[in-house]
Image (tube, rainbow, N blue to C red; front, side):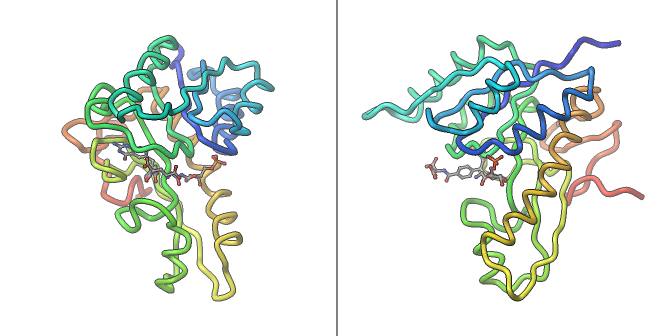
Length: 214
Ligand code: NHR
Ligand code: GAR
C-alpha cells in the first residue's frame, strides 16, 4: 500500500463539492483531506470542514496587495499542509502563472461547463443564452492558462427550455458531486498523471472531453 494522499481543498463559498470530497475520502483509505483554505472568511465550506474536524486557514485579500503578494501568502499557507494534491472547489480567484507552475500535475479544478466551452464565469447563463441542448461540468488539471488545462472527467446534463440559472446549476452540481470525488480517488491511487499538458489515466492518454469508457 502506498502512503495516504494528503488532499488540500481551496474554497470560496458553499463548499458542497468539498463536502462530497470529504465524504468520498471517508470511504477511500488512500486519501485524506488534511486542510481547507478559503479566501473568504464567511465561506460556509469552513463550517463543513470544522464539522469534519479538518484544519482550516483563511487567506484574505488585503487592500493594495498585488496578485503576486497574495499568491505568495497563499503558498505559505499551503506549504503548512504539505499536500500531495490541491483541489480547487469553487475557488474564485485567478492564480498567477508562477503560483500554478509550482503545483503543475498536483492541482485540479472543477469548472461548471463542458470545457473547452465557456471558460471563465457565468457559465450557466451562457449555456442558456446559447440555447445549448446540453451543459455540464469538467474536472481538469490546472495550468497557468485559465480553464485550459487537460480535462480528466466530464459529466453532461440536459438543458430544458424552462431552465433558469438556479435549476440548471442545481442539475450540474449534482453531477459535480459524483465526478469530483472519483477523480480525487484516481489521483490518490496514482492512476492519474499529467505529462506535457496531457492527462493520463492508467497510462492511457485521456481525450479532450475527459475519460470516456470504451
Ligand atoms: N488559475 C489558473 N492560473 N488557471 C486556472 O485554470 C484556474 C485558476 C484559478 C481558478 C477556477 C476557475 C473556474 O473554474 C480557477 C482556474 C475564478 C475566475 C475569476 O475570474 C475565473 C475562473 C475560475 C475562478 N475570478 C475573478 C478574479 O479576478 C474574481 C471573481 C469573483 O471574485 O467572483 O480572480 O471557473
Ligand atoms: C461549483 O459549481 C464549481 O463548478 C464552481 O463553483 C461552484 C462551487 O460550489 N466553480 C467555479 O465557478 C469556478 N469559477 P461549491 O462551493 O458548493 O462546491
